[in-house]
Length: 391
Image 1 (cartoon, rainbow, N blue to C red):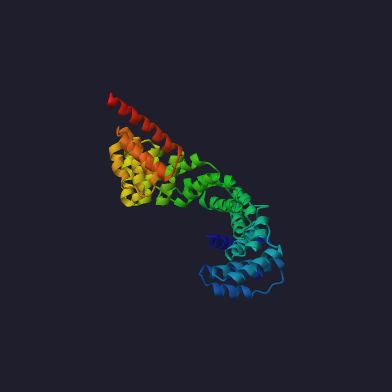
Image 2 (cartoon, rainbow, N blue to C red):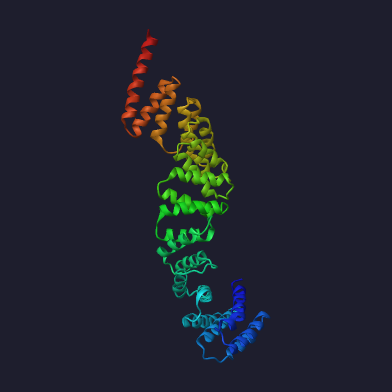
């Protein structure tokens, strides 16, 4: 499109040349012929026709060099296109809009050829004086792209801001460039609003959401991170298991453990993966949903015997003493803890003799203030009970 428009501009300049006395008649006739060949996509013939033009006029030479650059570009010969457009620009013979357009073409070619540093001076010169019929915003976008490619991060941001100043709505490419520069410069707080715009533009792209949540967490904005992940889920973004687990953790940290438990329960393998089962049990326990927590701990114990201890603790807490004693028989290790738990359970069942036996067992394994207190208390109860029976 750029080249097609430029060829139209060339035709206009040629037709006006005689009246303006800028292009000699000799050159104008041959340029017209070359341009017709190019219109018929006979670029090699058009190039050959231009190369045969022999003129000493500086303006003619500049004009021919520009046309050669265009035709080489059309013929996908980038290096000679750059060479001839450079000659045209350096001649300073092409003034006003035709000079501006020529330099813009040269800069764009250098950019496409990955000669970013060479393109930048041309772009900066272009924005100094922009013809009314041309668009300054596109030049600033090219400047941002060039700086980005050569990792000049501090220059990317003002260039993208200049471009966005001309726009009425946010666009993906300039925001992506700006975000990349902000992240490289570790401007985390500045990157957050940029990411917020990106998730609005591309809500289906999960990586924007993840980056936003990561930065919010890094900046200690946990509530905002929770809101972001919850919104992503609500909008149907394809969150991973890891994302959902993080969402559950954020719910729990925000004092909503029941939502955390529900979130985990909806994951694939929620009742088969022991880690997920344990997470649900822990969250239900935090939520003081004792029956749901007990059920999950019982499921976890089927996967790993060590979780029998968690089941027994909750049963004792909830007054299910006989069931707790049965579960405690399956707990491995934790001899002292198990003995003290049995002490409490038997005490609550008014089986003081059994309670005393286990209190002494705990104290024998590892003497402690707690076990000694139980022994003293239970001994007193037993004596009182015996005295009552004697009477």
